[in-house]
Amino acid sequence: MLTIDGSYGEGGGQILRAALSLSMITQTPFRLQNIRAKRPKPGLRPQHLTAVHAAAALCNADVEGAHEGSTQLMFVPKEPTHPGTYRFDVGTAGAVSLIFQTLLPPLAEATEPSWLILTGGTHVPWSPPYHFLEQVFIPAVTQLGWQVNLKIKRWGWYPRGGGRVHATVRPPRPAPEHIEWVERGELKHLWVLSAASNLPAHIRQRQAKRARLRLQEADLLPHRVDVIDAPSPGVGTCVIIIGTYENGWGAGYALGKRGKPAEQVAEEAVAQFLQFHRSSAAVDPHLADQLVVPLIVRGASWAFSTPEVTNHLRTVIWLSTHFIPASITITEETERIIIQCSN
Image (tube, rainbow, N blue to C red; front, side):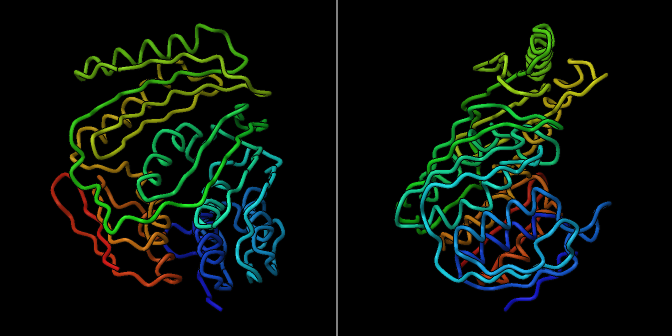
């Protein structure tokens, strides 16, 4: 049984989620200590418990310490991952994207298809929004041979939640021998999404107008601008910028809140995207740490460039190599950092 220090590096829920994914795939039991020790409210929160219970359901695991506030957890897979139809409800605005990314690796490696219905937050703070999964994460893991389709049925904002996402995961195609996202090439498609739920139409329209203006000032012309009245039981607003390159992806994302002008939401999203675009990197810094587990699981040699090495990225590299040995190097260049793995 592996013993893992949950306070290492980033010290958040990412360590738990990656450990669950890799434990299911490798059938390796683990004990996680000091869970979320660096957070204002240490220990397991409802969204983390949903991930634990969901993972346990997939592999019939024995679990100890799975209760709110727990700082220790033992997880022992008893069977290989069972493909099938699953429904999981976070019960709060906890991010369904993080539950999805926990369950995807073992399901994507299975020999039969699976169907997931996930309920919770789809566009909430501190987690990838649904459209980042759909437009950035899924296209990347598709190149690794995974076959995944996502559909959003209802949007879930903080604090109400109640969003719903359907996922179909089919058996994988053969893994490539080598994957490389280092030289990103030209920007092929630039998409602006301005969305709001249960708010006046002028808010999402103002967001879209300001985002388009700021991108044009940077000599970038969006290929597509969508202004959406998003179906949701809650209230919320966001702007998402997605750039698809010949060999890479970048994004900007900002949420609205009471008292925050629509124009500021757009400014924040565009600024985040432009920071990536002005680098020479191929992989968005938020995508970078999300790709480590899929890349290591697929077993190919790989390399990608990213603008910075975040604490999340360092932490998931450290955690992943506990379960699957891999030689990963980090090389710093002027405008980008190259992460490389030779298996």
